[in-house]
Length: 242
Figure (cartoon, one colour):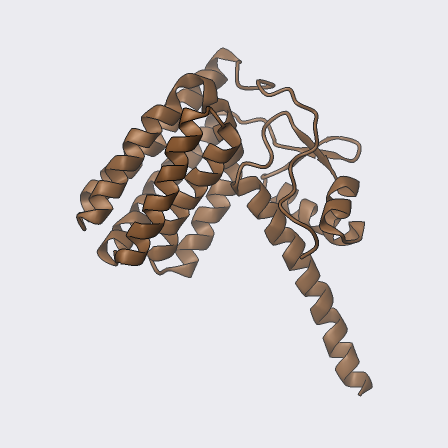
């Protein structure tokens, strides 16, 4: 019996750590943390209903991956985006995500089309209301319905790691008109996937990636990107304990 307890306790601890890590990833991917916002271990631990330890471990993991950075003391935030890093992310995204959309288009079925229809409706509503946070969440859903449908867990993990590094900066696109332009590209992606045309879908997705890249590159070049969002309010946490 004692041997069994020794096996079960570490499993529970690992499950808790992974649960907190996954919630933090979802928080970032769905637009819950913007450049200029800050989060603390204490705030996240309270929101998740857990002790600070698994939160610290998750934040350490995300900081080590370049997704988050230490702002000051116990405060964590989104790191500054450099031109070199942005260009590197763009190049890799173009290769990896266009592959995923090709594979997903070849496997297209009614379930995917229904999910994309719902996500696109949310994108249009968020654009109409100029709601950056909800737009980013809907944008994540739209793209990842496609990427999951590609049928490759390995490819999906690669893409998620890329999005953890780039998606917080989508908040900076709000004032540029990019949301409207991007929705035109989302419509083109949707039409190509619906028509089972992998190459057209890949071209439309590449245009979407490049459109966001051009706006962000211009912001970095002008110095307007850094500190554009000044809010010091704590980030929205998705839910309570895992």
